[in-house]
Image (tube, rainbow, N blue to C red):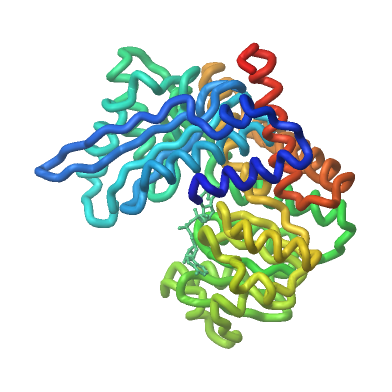
Length: 404
Ligand code: NAD
């Protein structure tokens, strides 16, 4: 996602919500963008941490390790986190961080040093009530463990609420694993209830952490998953795919396409299969103006971040395809992070079941808010409806602070 997308979305929002020049300037600027250099063995890695908006609370967002990370990307993603956090009603602003590094070229030992250096660079801006990092692309709970340890060394006291998706041993919660797919599944069930769709068939693009977990949840609940894919290609079966069997094949042989006795489809074909609901759960920009016209499901649940480009959104809307937007459908991860943050602040007193029930409520409430608003305003798509709700919440908080 580039920051231009953010400008386009705010422009769409302004058709429903009056946005003054002052408010627009605020929405399109960042509270803080910090950058630094991590030097190691003669190599240099640029690192960033950006806080977009903090009207609703401390910054919250992941840290990604990728050779293509750029300042524009970190800024765009921190904007996106402000919107997502505001939409689901969390007491957080939006933040994001990244290091321009290809983790596959480095040992775990190097990644540990780089992760600790990242915290040394930005420790003064991080904290349970300032900015709370979490994992993102190519970072995980092990990296969060190093980061929490380094943060606590910097400040000189224990502060488990400073980082989420940390190891269970350091105050992480089991619920955080698989929470993105779980939240998506809660939204899926509410959505089919509202549109009165009985026993929908589902095609899922992407069979990684999010796609695989979503396929498992759907399969276990008795829904028919008729197609799945990974970067090697896809498979389809009108009778429904045996998901536990595909998971085994994927683990043993590396791709879902190694499954025997099943029809193979290309990645492009998978997007255009006649299922009821398409769930993109792979990468950004998969449905574009080049293929949006070929989509033949009536509904899309966006589990990946930004799987549909703004141009494709317009085409799908004009075709009557209803898309549940990513900022709603994949907010389960950050919402579970919120539960972990609350638990860490409270000294770890909550049972997992209590946290899970609260996560369900957060997702269901957010879905109903978006669906109800969109249902009354069908001249916009559900993504714009979600943005209107989120932007209003941020601007109301800005007003209450007397900043605008
Ligand atoms: P992952 O790397 O575990 O899995 C990605 C999957 O997509 C892999 O199976 C890969 O083979 C597949 N893939 C790649 N290119 C493909 C293509 N052209 N066609 C079909 N499949 C393809 O990543 P993930 O954590 O599952 O994340 C997936 C998406 O969900 C990303 O957009 C990510 O930003 C978003 N997301 C993830 C989380 C999370 O908690 N992991 C949270 C919010 C959003």
